[in-house]
Image (cartoon, rainbow, N blue to C red; front, top):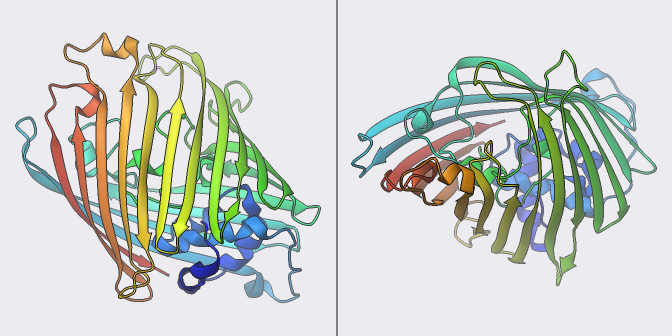
Length: 399
């Protein structure tokens, strides 16, 4: 998502991994991350933030269909095992995922995008419940899904960008340069997005982004929470303001947002209809060409349907090593704070703490291998659940 200057090396690697990402990035601007980069591991995420300074769109050259069509493919596999717990038996589990996306530039200002995802395996999440999760890319039963289908248009030299269709709001809201990609960075959901933001599953939605200045972005997102049958019955909305300064040649991104949503009664989970709201922020700042810092915070009211009312996470990324310039190291720490109403349902409540450490090694131009270590204390806010250690290994082929 985001680097300049000394980050040219990383950008070059990212562009070589994804055919056609340059066209998508020209459309994205500073508003957020384009979905077409979501499946790209590690350094490929850096590309999007270059758009903070891009306000003019290059015209699309005339050509045939294949000149305007781009695609990417990421195949991932994860093996994880827990150990050292008196509550859960030691066991190893496997998960696989396939992300295939296609982007078509209809003309200078209109584009169309489709993301197809498939996978299988619950992993450790199927046995050991946590608020933060062990693998955001775990699927459960074998399945295939069209995750995103949308049309996007830009106007006024790219300063305005609108999207409508089956959207994923997390591709553009609450993004972060160093903690936002479960395929190439942290695996835990608590480090991919803010746990205190109740963003719905992908369904009908829309977003509008405005870039009034090179370092400022304003985004408004909408999504139905009642499915496709009555898209305006229950809904979710989010407003984000982003500041994207460059300090001494080092890119920073400071995003502030507020959200509100209403949910219909769920007959399967016997949950009544409810409404809630909250706010949060996501910061990332490159300190040097080799070090980037990040943090997130989210808050929502203490209600009986909210097991947590606050979530904070922070950490760093090391990159551009002299001996292996395309490898990265990430460390994150997260705390999920229990709401009082949820804590009263437990005999021994305590906040959940989560640590994740990974090293992503780029073995070839298209192959990545990532050893991963995670530690969780007080899983799901219950101090009776002793500390759990999980070791993992993720492999990714990105084309």
